[in-house]
Image 1 (spheres, rainbow, N blue to C red):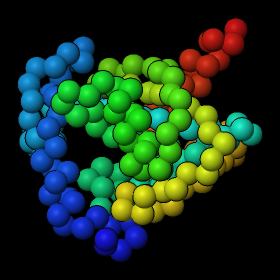
Image 2 (image 1 turned 45 degrees about the horizontal axis):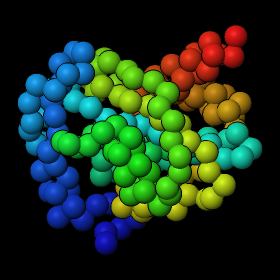
Image 3 (image 1 turned 180 degrees about the vertical axis):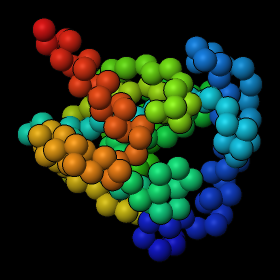
Length: 184
């Protein structure tokens, strides 16, 4: 294993060879390429994000590894990742949650977001879940993580938005709007 927050070279190469589906603007598959090819060509593709809450209603956020292609060192969703060829969004979300935080929890799909600049042109399926357990962050992918109250998170994001990935900021905004609408 490499230094904390750093992926070994062989892991980076394996990740770049992952098979992903390129998609159109409506998130319909149009072809299969490697992760490296999709990113080099800037093609839209599918991903999942998970917002994980504890019993106190705090959300778990994590700081991305310094080796990540996108948004290294920035705070992000509880867990996230690409949907691999042949995976459903739920299977992908459960895989990412297990890989990144060592957890297996019930997840509920909350949003489907079409590709846009804020999501780095990814079709994002957002899930939420609740846990009584403390996440065990994978040090190869995550520098640090913590549960934080909603008011603290929103104050931090207001004062220092640059600390957070653009995708997380956008998804959080949509999530809060969706939750506000369902409570009306």
